Length: 267
Image 1 (cartoon, rainbow, N blue to C red):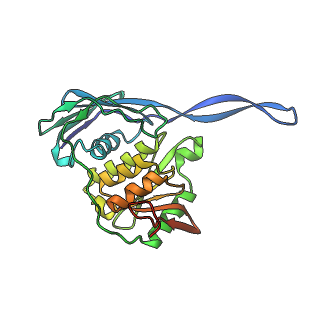
Image 2 (cartoon, one colour):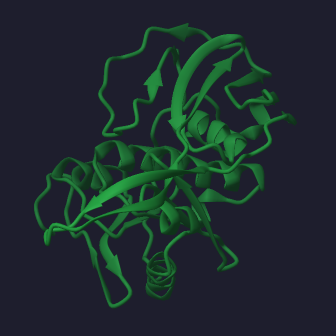
């Protein structure tokens, strides 16, 4: 795969002045950091397919990860070239295979950033059942400990989601974004671009886990999805259907392993 990444990542924060009102009647000016909201449009074989609201970092990981979790590619081996313009506004992907594009199936993702699907790939990759996996307790707590330390951009702005990926060698990488979906795609893209087997990784998301987040993890082939928050009943059913090990309320002192079957009943 030929990667031509011309985008030079800039400061992902901007300083903003606020007038702080206290209950005791006092007022004072404070200056704080805000996230710089970035927009990127992704085209595949000259057809616009995605428009993403994101942070202006790790764009190549975001693009590859998103195409993979959407089932548009089966791996980096299908990508002939990835070009990202100097402003990071456009990412052009050329595939080695011919693809047919169709209308987008209307769906409202649980993402509040305004990410938009512009076209879908006809006959794209579908979700497949995952192998049964016993969670590594030490690894889960290591991820929870890393989350508790906080991530750099969130520490500065309190405005991001993070996704931590636990790699086969025991190391942990962190990716941040204004969207929890984008943060997970960056983590997935990082693994793909570095030839890391996603089937041997675990993902820890700082957001709640609705059905579309479970779908993304299953599409990525990651057997264990962990969150510091909670799932929904639909996400638990989908995880059970495809064999995804789903862990919630993961903190440094405890975590909960979902024990539900496909029907949603306790096993």
